[in-house]
Amino acid sequence: TDTLGPAARIALLHVGDDDFPFRTLDDLEHLRRSGDPVEQILGAADRLEADLIVMATAGHHGVFDALRGSTTERVLRRSPCPLLAVPIAAEAERVKTARGSA
Image (cartoon, helix red, strand yellow):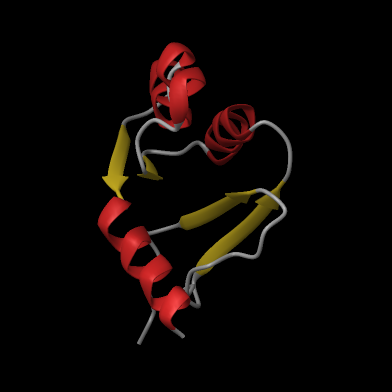
């Protein structure tokens, strides 16, 4: 089953207006916010007293991100807890290719 047990609490924060693209677990708390992603992530981490932030990262997107840092980098600098960055470039490319050929 998708039961995580009483000791585990997982909250998923989706920032943006687009549809949430991933499958969710039954025990998952799903939060949807709009606004600045960095502020929303950090605010949720504080409110939830997070032990860990996990973020999908695709790297820099152009010169502006290279100068100010990616969203993941900006969250990492101010995070109240450890951050795990998971690269999604290969998966994102696979999904784009699959959608283009459908």
